[in-house]
Length: 212
Image 1 (cartoon, rainbow, N blue to C red):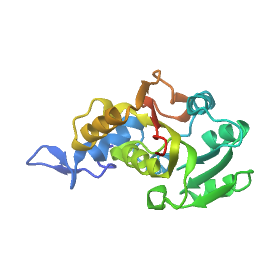
Image 2: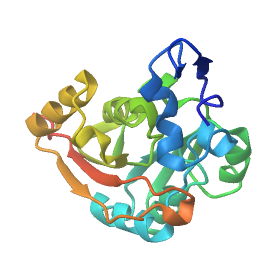
Image 3: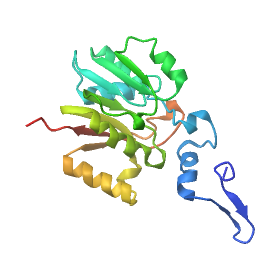
């Protein structure tokens, strides 16, 4: 498993050595129990239906609202938002998933890396289950905030790692959430078990201030 993550055995050191940060290299294995797979590489751990409904309820989506799901996967959150009567747009990296999303009545589907998308328009709600490893969820949430209209709400499923780690990125994110009055709800253990991982997760809710 260590070799699969990029470690090379060093006889003098009597350990596997990594070119970069060993913790970042093995984090996906710890989170998922798998060394290499497309699912792990793209962090495709899709939102279980009950959790998707919980996110949509927390987002307080009403008929006619505009909703964005970044890194949509198969659109578990988008589908629930659509059922709630919203006009839904998706961004998704995997072309296989894009083809599936395009077969549904969403307002728009963009193929590409969400982090490379410019905020050329805004939405009333953003609901998301971004990739977790290497702080990707923090980067995705921070980027997604740029897509919220004044008075809008963002609800994100995130790894709970940022709540206890002391890396600079985690400390800064915690301080920022506290500053803007965001809420963090720890989800029950096993919330993602049906998706193939036992990662501990939380629900982060961010409200964008009204325009002055």
